[in-house]
Image 1 (spheres, helix red, strand yellow):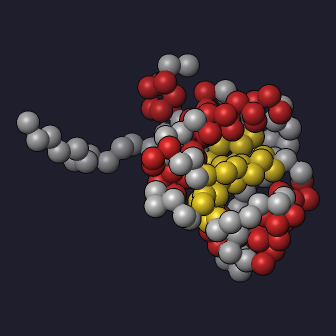
Image 2: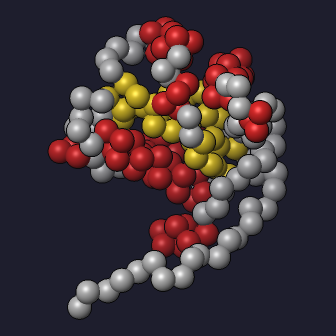
Image 3: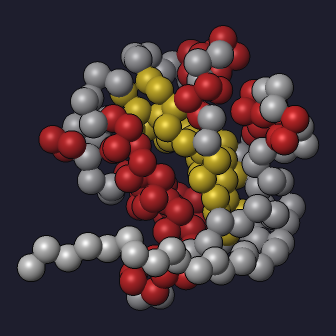
Amino acid sequence: MDAIQVMLTRKSVKKYKDTPVPRELIDQIIEAGLHAPSGLNKQAPIILAVTDKATRDQLSALNAGDDPFFRKDPFYGAPVVLVVLADKSASTYVYDGSLVMENMLLAAHALGLGACWIHRAKETFSKPEGKAILEKLGIQGDYEGIGNCIVGYADMEPEKKPRKANRVYYID
């Protein structure tokens, strides 16, 4: 798919099939994320690729917290969660992590998968349970959760919403 076409047709998917996503596709999405630009090329973001159902469900529960809107599953049944965290010592860590997220969202769409950015990674990895996951993986440093990129095979047709008008101002 042409890059511009990928950008213009990507939509957030909020319902997924149970079908597992092949590791090769997950690796391609991650590779796209790792090639995102970063301030001073510090490459501060890291990615947790979660396909283990128990860990995925734990992250879902931590993400939902006490929010009644997300009591069911804030990951909408997606079988893959790619968590982006970034080293806070980089002054551009939030922007760098956001670029990783966008690259992964676009890559997933280009590969025929559904994806959606789910917030609250910051809150999830501020909790003792979230920190324990990082510790278990041997991740040290001052990392902040930037976002959760949920991925899977869509079980819905995302709605194409119109773009708002008057958002571009030319200075010639």
